[in-house]
Structure formats: structure tokens, C-alpha cells
Image (cartoon, rainbow, N blue to C red; front, side, top):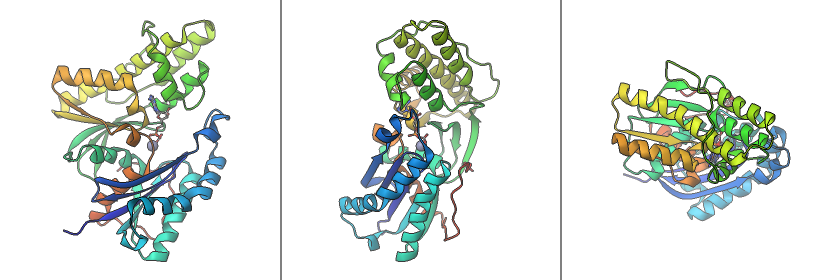
Length: 330
Ligand code: KG4
Ligand code: ZN
């Protein structure tokens, strides 16, 4: 069978990325331009600035992705672009660029869901992984437990009722004075602390999650006692959110009788979460899979990987394709 080369374009938040992936699994290039340094001084992503930065760099990044893959644009079989969920202005840059490139070259346009892309990062790292499997998506905007029924069909089993887990990490980091982006900083500081502070876990009887109670408890503790050991606070926060995640994973494994579960999204690079999931996997004889670290946070290779499976399924977009900031996973 002829090889299929998909170009992925990602601009849903503060990373501009273009990648070329062969047959959904082999990354030929994955150029990522992070705007973290620009947003850092504002303590979070400023949507208008993010859009402008995407516009400035996207064309150069596309050219770099082709060059690194050693391909000409006419060798590309499909252009997969993130059209949601994400920041509307940021998404529009990638969508408009992909539409223009598709129109100019005649290469098919493939609308791709960002969350599905996070799941597909696992296909790149684990070459034999095939649906069905369960995936826990833990990112800055989402916390979903998903039954991946096929490459393009998903059933959401549970989701957060309030904050996304990454949002809670970022807020805790800001409150204890670590700055943005918070997740990696909390991860690092927690290594120096002990998880010796009891934090409240919301009681939920289905497979949903809740992180705002844990987050608020950390904020209040820090406020009441500014001299509190920040490393212990971070370690305790990580322990509590990991317990919240594992609680539902345990329930879903028993219900769905699965022998493997994958994680995806920026927070899946957290070292404590990985260690606890690995321990759990060993105890219960469940295979725990993660994308390699570079593929956990936003990147276009994951969009190209998902785009490949969308392409095979015949999913196509046209010039009417629009950005959908609150796009759902179907
Ligand atoms: O998946 P992602 O890059 O973007 C979204 O689609 O949201 O996730 C970004 C989130 C941020 O909240 C960031 O703080 C968090 O992932 N993150 C981490 C770590 N690395 C990134 N959270 C905890 N520990 C980490 N090591
Ligand atoms: Zn993401």
C-alpha cells in the first residue's frame, strides 16, 4: 500500500506547531514554537497575543516542517488542522492557514479535534496500540475519561464537573508563587516536599471528577498560613488530584474489564502521576501507557496522527470549515 503523508497544523492555545507524519505513526517532523516566554509575564495565556504570534510564525514553521521531513508540499496527502476546542482567535489562525494551503494546492483538508489528537499521541509512541482502550485525558482545558471505541469514535465516560486538572495545577502554582506555566513547576517543587497535608476529595458516585475543592483548600491553607512549606503543599496537592484520577480509573477498569489504559495531555507528563499510575498498574496487572514527554503537551504530530485516521475514514473539510472553541469529542 502507498505511504500516506499527513501534515498536522496546531494553534489552539499558545503553541504553533506543524508536523508531518507517515501512516499515522511515524513522525518525520514536528516543529513546535512555544509562546511561553511571551505569556509568562502576564501569568497566563493572553488570547489576543497568542493569535498574533501564531500569524507571525505559522508560515515559517510549515516550511521548516516540510524541510525537516525532506518532502515537497505536493507529496502531502492531507492537511489535518485543529478546529477545536481551544481559543477562538488562536484556532482561526491555523484553520485559515490550512484552508488557504488546501485551496492553493488541492490537497484535502481534514478537520481534527484537539482532544482526539491528544489521544492519538499514544499511537506514535506505542506502535501496536489499537482501539478499543480507555484513555484518561488530563490537560489544561480538559479532564476526560474516554472509551476509545475506534480511531474516530469516542464515548466520554466521565469528565470534570468544575476545573480541568491542568487549570488547578496552574492556579495552585500561581497562588504559591511559582508562576506560569504551573504544572511543571509544581511537579518539580513537590519532589522536595512530603504529601503530609490532608486535602478534601469530593464524593462523586459516577465517573466524573472534581478538582476545585482540592484547589480551593490549597489556596485557603496558603492564605491562612503564608509561611506554610510550599513543597509539602505541592506534594499534597499532587497526591490528592492523583487519588481523584485513580479512584475513577479503578472503577472504570472493574466495569469495562480492560487490561490497559492510556494517559494523554499536558498533565500526563507529571512525574508523580506517572509513578503512582505505574505502581497501580503493577499491582493490578494493568498496562499503563503514556505518550513520550514531548508528545504530551500540545504539538502537531498528534494532530497529524489523528488526521491520518480521519483521512482513512473519509472525513474532509472545505472552505466553510470554522473554528469551534467548545468542540465536543463525539
Ligand atoms: O495538553 P496541554 O499542553 O494543553 C491543553 O490542551 O490544555 O496541557 C497544558 C497543561 C497546563 O495546565 C500545564 O500546567 C500542564 O499541562 N502540565 C503539567 C506538567 N506539564 C504540563 N501539569 C503537571 N505536571 C507537569 N509536569
Ligand atoms: Zn492540548
